[in-house]
Amino acid sequence: MARALRIPYDDDPLPTGSVRLSRQEFDEGFRRLESVNFPAERNVDDAWRNFTGWRVNYEPIVDALTALVVPPPAPWFIERPALGMAKFPLVLNRTPDEPEGAQGFGVNKTFKTPSVRESNNS
Image 1 (cartoon, rainbow, N blue to C red):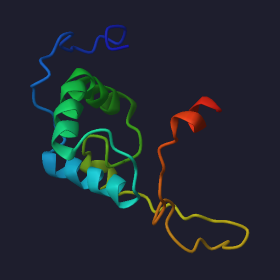
Image 2 (cartoon, rainbow, N blue to C red):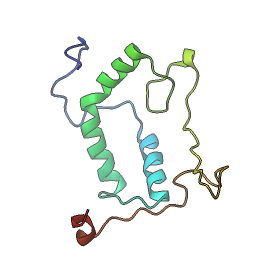
Image 3 (cartoon, rainbow, N blue to C red):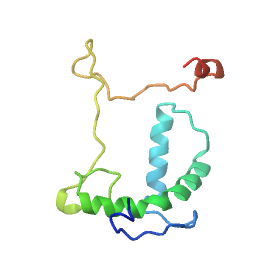
């Protein structure tokens, strides 16, 4: 896509290259996943190393596409103050029993990794 749109990019970046997302922002996201007991395959330090190692491949392209397409503000896009600041949306878990949404979606939810037997039956 980058080549077709003539967006300059490094086709073989080093996995140790820098990324715009800070370690602090990454840790905050990791803690959010931990808070809902999302199963992690790696500890936070290994996850950060692997995350940055992959992100260097696409971050500059996504930033260029964001500037080209101009989607609405969101925390995961480059900052564009002219469009206003972005924040994480509150997604309410609306059900027939709780039409107003008693709690934010994903709050106090536990995610379970399926057993081998369960995953083979799906």
